[in-house]
Length: 143
Image 1: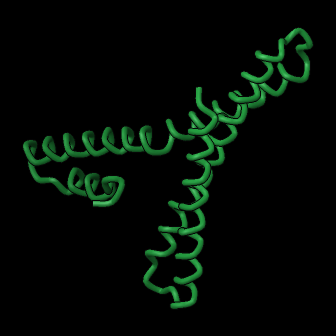
Image 2 (image 1 turned 90 degrees about the vertical axis):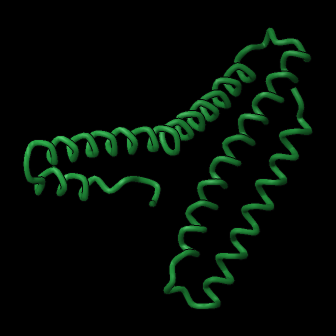
């Protein structure tokens, strides 16, 4: 099974079903697959994207506060700069993970030439190294 259930197959089962019992079973399958696909989308696409957007917005809000609030103490300013850096790192990691995922999908393509596969493998290694380095930077910043 891939990431999502095939709704087309479930729809055909419902449409081609013979008798009330078979159609009822197919309708329940269609409903279950639809709900499952919605949940998978929410967990794998929507929520991570939303969290990434919140992190971006957080960085923008901190930027505005640092620029416009002259009443900040040095300690408060330092704390905000640390939070901004953590938000920026989170966004960078998120974007690299998306690129990594897409590059791995391309690499799975059977029609790639050997030199193309090597290029994509290098890109994957680069993304993984960058993610690892950013995670270390994130840890070093602390709370």
